[in-house]
Amino acid sequence: MACVDTWLIVLLILICLSLSAFFSGAETTFFSLQNVRVQHWVSRGIPNAKRVAKIKDEPDRFLATILLGNNLVNTALATLTTMLTIRAFGEGGAAVAAATAFATIALVVLGEATPKTIASRHAERLAFWLVRPFETAERILYPLAMLLYRVASVLSAPLGRVKEKKPSVSEEELQTIVQMGAKEGTVQKTQAEIIHKALGLGDTLASRIMTPRTEIQWLEKGATLTDFYAAYRETAHTKFPVYDGEPDNVIGILYAKDVLREVAKQGLKESDEVTHLARQAHLFPENKYADDLFVEMRNQKTQMAVLVSEFGSIAGILTLKQIVGAIVGRITEETEGEAAIQKIDEKTTEVDGGLRIEEANEHLKLGIPEGDYETLAGFVLDRLGRVPKEGEQVVYNGTRLVVGEMTGVKIERILVSKA
Image (cartoon, rainbow, N blue to C red):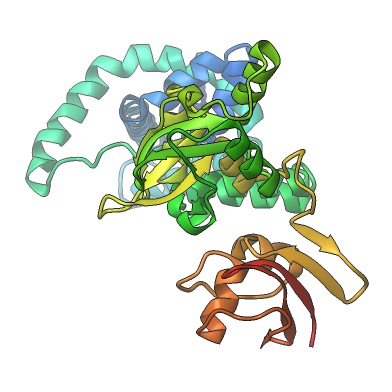
């Protein structure tokens, strides 16, 4: 009978070790899983993915179950080990020492280190194997586990409230994931650049990518078809702000396609007024972030935003195409005669004066720092300290910037070459 009891104790010890390994492995497995990865499984409809997501969504309940389960089986293991050693060595210090040594080694090696090592290496595979057994353990232990958790919450209340739950993935972490994907080849370099720029919209003010006031092609209220044709020939723009009296009083946006459609439909005369065709102008503060502005423009179904400074004057205009261009690169108008960046030879490139510093640095490797300018023309003006003449140049960081074409005080084209 004593032999049977001994083997029963041994069996119970093995069961306790197995349960200890189970709880330790489950802890490492589910804590190792990334929430983004789990949500990806759910979206693909992988079996048991929702069960895994439920455990991840309730970390307090999960942790309470793990702690209670581990403590119960570890305590039981220590008790059973002591009983076994007393049978083997009799009562006394030797039995207690043997029980302590065996229980400690068994728990550390078989109940903690080994299962946690395996779980950390194969977390995704083990999650689907462990989720159902863990749910069973959770149902059994939950009432007592939550009671203990609430007691712990009351005792820890003086230390302060628990911080709000953080987002699963921060913007910085997402940037890192994309960079790692590009480095490992799972994300194409072009895709990584687009994602990086798209995320950067949240930190980009609309004023940094807008067409500044000085480059706007205006039409005054009452402008005729002849005036429209003159403005249309002069620029590649297809949308023109219409003002009444002074440019700061914008009353609408005239779309070239609306005028041309009206010409085709009714045969307008060159002396006919066309600004009555202007659509509503949508005004926004220039210090609005580009991503927020994009959403508002889309919701209001407008392709152009008129940006207003803090003093109430018109600072510039911004189109949806420009915002998209900030992500995927500049989009050239179909009617635009010259490209923003045009390679002349191996050493020389001709660029639009309105080319943004970010684009110039990206495509031409100029290394121009941030300053009180947004465009390459602005940088030239900043370095010279005055309005240049055609042929004047600026040398910076081993690169020569030559003013190639001027229209009044506006720098139209710049020749970029190595000094």
